[in-house]
Image (cartoon, rainbow, N blue to C red; front, side):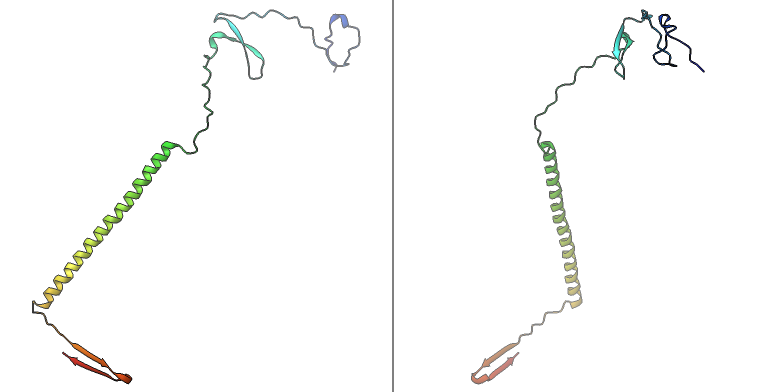
Length: 154
């Protein structure tokens, strides 16, 4: 199948520089009229960098430029976070220490109650009798050459 000859009229009858390939037809630029009922048209770059027409009323509102960044060196740790952490650690330490004191008081109270119960039980089982004292005296005398004398009195 042969391709149609689309050469300009002045080149008809001459061989094509690319045999079998059509040449591009001559395009005459024509004025493009836009139906500008919505207002003026502006040209903006599209995603590929080409300028395309767009109604001015459809443009997004201009955004103000961002404020300049603060590039001064910052501390490694946030001072407010350090204060909050220090206060939290202090509160945790105080709470832990207070819990030890309260636990010791509770254990001491339980031990005192147990000791009092033992004393009361001992008093009840003794029957309320008088006490008995036993005294024993030991006299021990060492003498020369390993001689010893022991006297028990009691």
